[in-house]
Length: 280
Length: 347
Image (cartoon, rainbow over all chains, first blue to last red; front, side, top):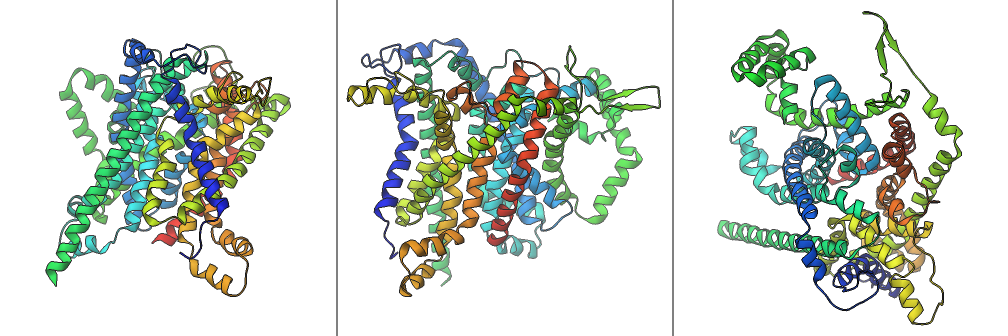
């Protein structure tokens, strides 16, 4: 690397990262503020966390969000993996480009459009088929799966695109059936990507406000819906406390997942090295 | 998963309703019904044809996500299109049916362009439209100006640093979007972080009004979508062949000129992809203008939301959605082309 980073690039990097992290840090710092006025420092206190522990609506909403996010992540991972497999491994099939378009469109589609269209579908289906019966956890989960499976598809597809096909071809040549090849060879290799996709789908669902607002019903307020209705009344320190808890959980989760995957990768690399060494 | 059960039953509407009514009371009847469906001509024909082609497993892998997306992503758009041509009425659902049966065999189709005419004539919607495009476009340019040097810096870091820096770019994306936008309220408001800091230093006497302005909306969009800009740029810059730059330097080209003549053109794919990934969702953004913008910063996403939730006029909201979609078709097409090329280059 003979081209050194210039002073300008370095400054922009520092500025960029500060820009990304200062708001999150300020959120955390003010959550320990004694004062009810969020931005006037009134001394250190953890009372907003205590208040949070006793806030029943928040706990109920968090539990609902957790259940929806888990179901969504599982459904989206299954569907997204199938779509990724089809797009990366099946070559050209009829209407492949339509499938490719359908899997990338939800990634960029403005959420208000997706939300509105899903709601209108559910209303129309209820009129014609009498299902789904009203709106709630089922409709939210279906809507979430539809937009988050696109992310899983992209992750799985790009992992498969970089994967050497010769392993799978060798197994097929030796007479293994395609399904067996998938479960014994492809799946274990792309497992880290699938796990990453699951986590991504989980967080997308856990954070979603706009689509959920369209397809939820009375009594099915997820955590973001609840937080947003509180925000409309103005800033309040208990939102900061809640935000800090959520940021902390995500950070710990991501770092743990990252470390785990790095360790597995290292072990696999070691195995490969030993195998190569053993052959020589 | 119930929906898959419905699809398996052949798609016939009368059949599925039968299955519901009878099946709920007695699973035995349902099993019998399934056997009956399997004995039906179309089912046997379809499964035999699939088996003849020797690709039943393959077809299943393709068709499950395919059917899901058709039913829950494509069909909804057709419904939105349909309702955008309907009249508003009181009641639930608040729109006139699109298809009415004049008699048993005469179908009466109604196209009503009134909603679109209404959008076109009302200055509020035109302004919201223009304002969305301008806000999204301006924020995209800002994002590119901040994101390019960052991506460049990361791509030129030591390999051991690169993954950590990339993780730092992505980490905010994993934490709640809503809460990160909310954090800016505390920073920008009149007695917020910035104003308190400036006033205590004696730089200003009166707080600067920043919250509920267009500035706050730009800031919010740039902040929220910066990772979407940095990641494709990083991928493009990282792939760049450095020997080209060396050759240019050997031939006496100055670094700045080499940057504009070589680096920028060769990373064009990343620039286009990043810009579209920011622009498209920013046009329809609702949360950021709702929380950080003032009454003047109307954007179509917010107009759609208010038409739907406050005015409860579903046909107008649908017409707004279709109008927004028409605006976004071209950027989405560009994005898919760029991404298709990237995927193609990968293999």
